Image: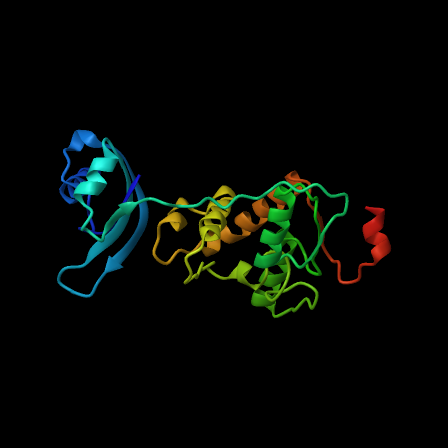
Length: 236
């Protein structure tokens, strides 16, 4: 596929406008365009009287090698070279232990489960369903549950935020993270938004589905696990 950056489009652009822009940029007719994928989209509001979208597109077209040769001097056009993050299957009788089920713990548990290691995850707080009730009680009645609140529990402190996904690095694992969130119910838009966020209304369901995904792959999650002994783990 071919990646095109910095395509400018009106805010009310149509699919036809998208094809026209690609055709002009690559100097090819419409019929040669086989597929267009939106990779990134941001709003350019530097000119208040001419606000527009800036998009990055991945395009599949006939004769891509010739197109790339013809557009070799255009810095906005390149060959798509995305590397997929892959989890290798591991063979071990020992089960790793993950402490905490915040964002880092969730992904650590997920990757270990995908690797076939059946991780044991310990979280001192509550599942997100119970936690939501405790947080609601605090916000409406001022009753704080010291063992279950906004600061900790399934999903971590961000579960009751709007779920902004901030990253400033180029790494193949970023796409893996976003695709996993989408698999668990986050909106598809996070895959291409310039400043993606899962959304307050979606977060609790996404976190719950993430837990179920880990369990489906053989992970074991223990809530209210502030005190947990080696004997408890070996018994599992």
